Image (tube, rainbow, N blue to C red):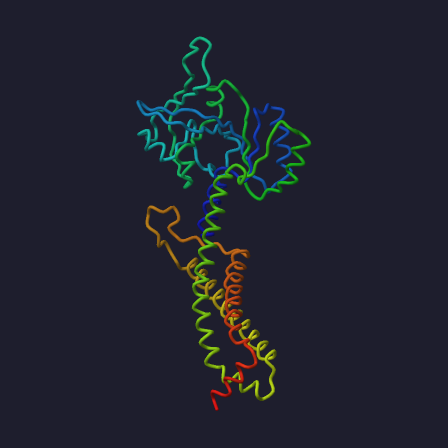
Amino acid sequence: MGGLQSKLIERSKKILGDVTLSFVLANEEQEKKIVKILKKFPEIKFSPEREVELLLKNGNFVTPVIAHGIDFLRPPPYLKGQNFEDMLLPQDIAFKLNLSVGMKVKLIAPGTVDTVFEDVPRMATLFVDGMITTDVPEVDMYHVWVRGSAISNLVKKTGYNKWRLYGSIPLDQLKIELGNQFKDEMSIRTWEEENSTLVWALRLETVVMIFLFVAMTMLVALCITSGLMIFFDKIKKDLVSFWILGSSKKKLTFSAVLFLNLMGLLTVSCGIICALVFLWGLDKYGGNIMPDVFIDRKIPIHISISGILISFGVPYFISLVFSLFSLMQFQSEEEELLDEIRSVS
């Protein structure tokens, strides 16, 4: 589950960026300041764009889109190598509007009108230069990439309102640098903040999976408890013999607790090691085992320290609790041990 979630987040960040800088509308002077600040961090790749909500029309087919006005001098990393002059479309939108490469399509700005035709929204006719697939469903269904100057002419405004940052980003240092220059003129939002609903859903999914894992471990622990109770009943005469030979009940209990702890530690550790070996083999030799309809045909493997700790801690703690519960059956009154001796004699 962690592998599927991490791949989903990785694909989304590859398109939408790790951090987004938002302006009402940056002017040329502000853009120079932003570029100067961002160049102080060589690990950051950045791309400015003019993002606006528009309508895309082909014949009788109309669909809302989020248009990204791209600066060809600083394209986003995922568009490098994509040569286009007017527009790039995801295949999902092209299929919805019955479009193909080389066809003309109308881009309509419902909120912008000409002074002469006040009731008629502005529109531009552009060529579809290519298709793209991002493997991010919400992007493939509603986002298009357009030449930046075409967006500026359509909405009659120049400048960029979004700067998408990619890579390992020193967020605290960046906030200080940009805050000193722009203060309240801009906002800095991480991918997690921009997609808070998705992040919440993924966390809920993780919590549910952990709950199911705990419930499954509880069922196994019940079986272990019944087995241990039978085991202690079988060795009760042996424990009584140790008690007769001078070993105290406290020492016998301590030895049993130590044995149960070591047994739980050893079995859970062996299970973790076997699981890691299995996951390594699945990642290296698993191949494409999922059907074609899935984006990730190879099951993604994501191993984290927190995942290992949860996988170790939950079964070990539950096994320890239930083992001690079964051991309580042995911790009886001294008279019961005498009764056991009398039954033998």
